[in-house]
Length: 219
Image 1 (tube, one colour):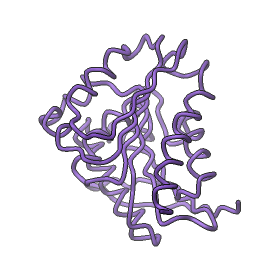
Image 2 (cartoon, rainbow, N blue to C red; image 1 turned 135 degrees about the vertical axis):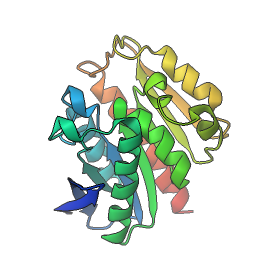
Image 3 (cartoon, helix red, strand yellow; image 1 turned 180 degrees about the vertical axis):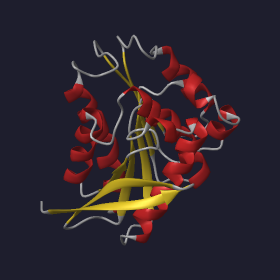
Image 4 (spheres, rainbow, N blue to C red; image 1 turned 60 degrees about the vertical axis):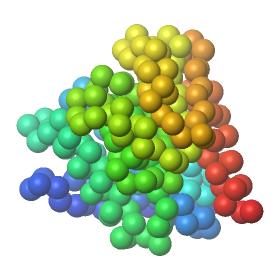
């Protein structure tokens, strides 16, 4: 499938952020915003797991946008979880304004997953997928339990069973607050936080989840 790719830039509170929008030639009017790991610990939009998920989505005909949070390029610009939420909300507006995409899901890995929990609730997203999200990081801002309870979109929570950075118990804690009837959880056996093992299983879980959404669109 032919895919177009273009770089975009946008401003958030005086900082200029950059991102990449990719659109399959025959996209389905569905897009996904990809949120990367912690910008102060080497996380960028070019993270291996983030790129792997992007490829899965593009194969399914879903347009994507990934971008660098404040702090990824210049550490002093980092504005915490609250700032990252603002970054993601601005990026979603860019994705919609620069494409014909009106329906956007949120996909986040690690720190990005924690941010995604907030963004999906605030924007009534089309779907939410988190990979190794930290409850404690999500809880740094606002009432995360209340926001999780307000989610109504399909949700997929993925975590590695051998994660030594964010314990797998965080998956159950996050799940316990979500009242949406459409929640799937996947524990990737033997996978650590960086998915050196189990990346294929992660990709399969994302593909299965999103392909079901795409199939429902066709009926």
